[in-house]
Image (cartoon, rainbow, N blue to C red; front, side, top):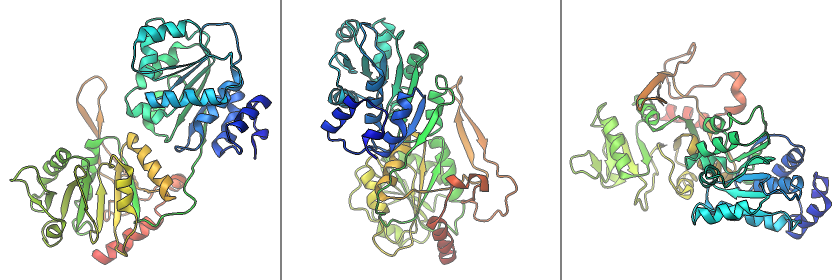
Length: 432
């Protein structure tokens, strides 16, 4: 398919060709015509899939020149770099010199930005916090708004800017809403539900054409770090199955916290790699941990870690995802014929990193059901106290091997152990 088949003007097709975009990507084929048609959309697609160009072309197709000073389109993005990228994309594809595009950056004098906006603008690109600050100073008029766009919504949530997004959306008159994100999760739905009613959901998966051979990967989606601790404590109760384990976290302080949480259960089997305090159970080398039979779980901080190989350790837990996805990739790529199983715990804001890793290796993690009896910690809204609830699994077939559960048949589309489940069974047979 070419851009000739997409619902944009001939002049826009010409600017697209001049910019070097010869063939539309999947997300552009699925969204541009819908944007031009006025639909509200939630678009889930990976980085580099063409999301930005999709709404830039859609906005330029719909926004026509008028003498109004108030903007007709507001685009919210997570940071200064994204503001510059989006403004550059608009300038690249804009065929109408009369369309006024202004980028509002999170730094610099706010009064100067207010003056620029009140002079007249058609399209505003801003981070949510600065747009809200200018709106509260009566410098951003939303009365004429036709299109409200949120790009990289997952990063906006990660940066904690949900509130200004919702306030700006609710302050605008009835308009078209477009939300773009790399992942779809509960926090995203919670942010957009106040202003988006039954939007069309479009999901595009772009995995690498060639799969990289990796160790089996199992993913647990959890609500917060405290629930992660409860989950790892529950899983590690199976001493016979999880007979030798490495648990990765990001900082040495977090490693101490995890050790303290686990030690009260059995302090002889839990240890830390190069501990901060001399009285903590620990090892200065992985080889020493391997050779100590009673040492079952080693907690390792990614902070300052160099040349750490995990061969011959049957279970690798990532309680936190490394800040650099390359660190995770280097561990998960299969180097030897070792039977190693990776179990990763991810909250909503960490799912973006998981998505990027899946995209690079060409396959998705196997999603595991949360085990029966898991205590899920939830933050109370009115009080700064932790409330909890417990996962209940109806009519469990067996109490053995409670770490892994199969989803109901009705949910099988989003659940697939595949090679991961096979590896678990083989490993349990081998090490049981």
